[in-house]
Amino acid sequence: MRLPRLRAPPEWGIKPVPQQFRILRTVDLFVLWSSLGVGLLVLVAGSLLVPALGLLESFIISLLGSIIGSIFLALAGLIGSDYGVPTMVSLRPILGRVGSYLPTILNVIQLVGWTGFELMIMGAAASNISGPILGEYTKPFWIIVFAIWCTALALGGPLIVVRQWLEKVAIWLVYFSTAWITFQVFSRPNVSAILFKPGDGSLPILLALDLVIAMPISWWPLISDYNRFSKDSKSGFLGTFLGYTLANTWFYFLGASIALIMGIKDIVSSISMLFLGNLALILILVDETDNAFADIYSTAVSLQNISPKTKQWKFVLAAAALGVILTITIPLEEYEWFLLMIGGLFVPLLGVVVSEYIIRRRKGGFRIEEFYEKSKKIGVGQLISWFMGIILYFAITNLFPQIGASIPSFALSAILNLLFHKLMKV
Image: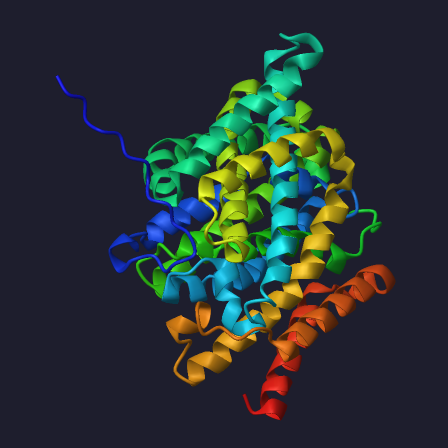
């Protein structure tokens, strides 16, 4: 008997996704982005809000920051939904082909960093559950196991991950486990005394807002790698905005709540102390892998913007290997700095992208060849607008953190780009 030939899934490189494969509906993208918006690292980020903020303040900041950041994120995905191109390629008509290489390199650095952080937290959680079954090699063992699984997901591609993995298995497990953790935390006897207690004010409230906004912003340099598969722009925008707002708000607030109510900053240890906490951790870990999948997959897609002829699977393997190496070298204590660095680099760039999209929409949109053979070499005005926004972001963060950096830097880059268009009559 002749066995059927096994075929590898199609490699979605930098070319536009054919219309027949743009099949993800609003509900599909809601599942994808709510799944990417949850995770142990988001809980850790939420724990950074306390004790500076009280629980009520943490909820308000988590909700407001998630709404703002998710609007930014959903707007960034419109080019991908409209034209079927990945994010870094979508920057070519804006920054120029050569100009797009700089955000590509920065994006690869942040994605490899995220891969390292994700594998680190998953390895720590799995080790906490299993105990030292392999002695000092237990955590490295789990890191390698998760790296192999996430690499397999990345080789499968977004359509398989969304339709076969998330919608059928992973998302339901994480919804259930998160509801259980939330119930357990807020059932503790000290909640009523803590709920309305103010924070100590050690973190300016608008800097806390920047920390929340930074999480959805960290996803925008790769959003079109996935939203290019959406049926239309409306599905892409609504699914992204609703899914990510819900997940990011819930997990930031839950992370703050766990740290404050349990009195332990170590999120993994705190969850393990809850009734059936280890089971909840296992279920979260099942879904956590999709975050590392997205980091690894989008590293490969981003690098193809620079080297389109290189096979995607080679970049996937390299990204996973680098992520494993980084788990040894990056301490989790650098996490807050890492979030603010992402915000500083990519919030201003998003201001340029959104303003450019609005300008082009008024003029009939982009021509598909502008993403490829007829892309300009470099967009000088756009790059200057981006750099000025970066300078403003880090100036505010370091000198005037109480006024918040995300919205001013986004606005400055967008306004400067509009002015350059007007002056140059582009």
